[in-house]
Image (tube, rainbow, N blue to C red; front, side, top):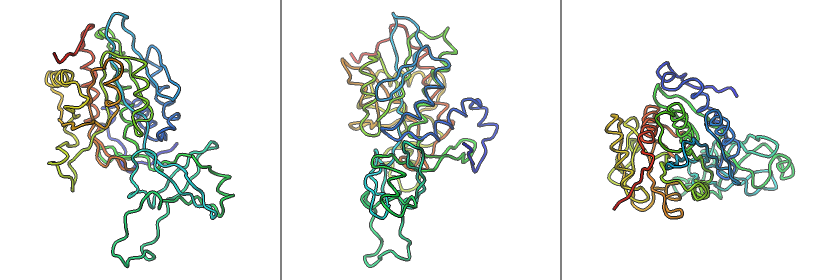
Length: 373
């Protein structure tokens, strides 16, 4: 597929990522993986990690894990991210051939109108647009128009009847926005589905770096790229129960709160370009968080901090309580405009997160445990 970026990455970006890593990231980002329909993106991830993992396993629902096996007598650390993205799904087709939709995951109906979309069918991709009544024709008697609900969102695929539309799509077909990605600067990447395809990229890079330093690795490592996080963390729940690691380092995106209109007193202070964020509280094991802080300080890796009230809102919540408990911690990548087609992040934050996770695993002891008492 030919990609037209408004800005071509410079040498600085190329130095941060080798060409094959950059190609892998871009392929992950443009491969649609709506929640519950993740197989195409998982094939991309699986093909990449197969080159350096000792073995790769896929469960019945499509979560994939890649292993580095050191010894039967040492602890196992699991690195986890989720592969699915938010989207829409075909719910109803009218007699005139218009397609009404519902959301997949936490999609935002307020930004759904006037967008180009792709409907993913068994026979291939069908292009469409979400309808938007021209401003000239909108009823303004009550002031500004109300925010649209999902029942108001429909897709136009150019069909003139239900029968014609059904030859192209069917109820239950998933839908994604047609947007891909742009490099906004040397450091800033923006696009659809950075949440959390970029997490799958990061754990793959950690696994690759650990494989290159086998002589320093004292533990077994499993990198898990889970399905269905956006609808409840079910993929992580299934696979962490199966793998039963001794500890888990989870990565996902977090809200960068450095743009206009965000109350930092309410949502905390997280800025793009100031490093990955560690969450404190909730599912996050305090001793692992403390360990990550020590590693970041020892290696001069900038980090930020967030407080968890009840839930992290990530797969960490699905992992830590499995069986007798899996000590877990979340390392988050700051992201602007989450759950939109223009999610935006920093490549330097990405590199810092990969570095922190890699060094944290390399410094684990073969019999490492984390206990609060």
